Image (cartoon, rainbow, N blue to C red):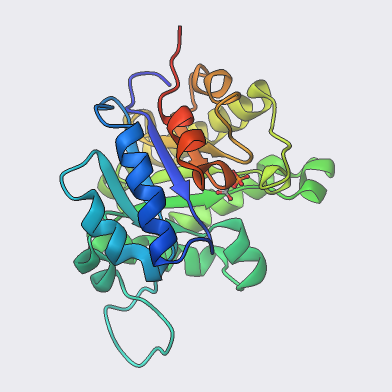
Length: 254
Ligand code: PGA
């Protein structure tokens, strides 16, 4: 974790109506009142952003969207722009989640355009990368990640790289209950930081936060957070219940 500020982000995916979102965020707010040593982020679906934004005003919780389009406005039916997200109260946006890559045709190049658009609008991109089970078994993990990292940050200025949060989520660990071992996760996080260092230098690589994602729960967060290159978590399933998400946020390293 080094001296980078931890970040715990909850990806609600396509769960929670507005009413359900209000209930969840209300409970979470109470459970984590006073936590000030972690950046806490929630990413509700678009339709619940407004109500959640309202409810977290003045709290220690920040708002993310799960996706964006790169244009500011225009005839793009069904899309949501960075300007709209900012005006709704978002300060973060998840980009390139593996489900978007897998089901909605996102590529390294669309991910790159989205990261750039987020940065232009002062949204912190949570840039997701990760290998599939087949890729891991074929020993392609590092080459896949290398391509995803360099494709995602292509032609982004060094000054902006420090603003990006990278989330390493092995696809085989998402929603499956399987987590990478702490050592496996650390090995990959170290590799990713090294790649950032090769591309942008050590100082920038030391600033960039790299989150781990894939079946993170209150009972495995500590083992991950003690790893030197793991700076937080992107949490799916366990962020849908206030008590389990709060348990992750309030991890304590003894
Ligand atoms: P999970 O999802 O925690 O349910 O495995 C993580 C994610 O997809 O961001």
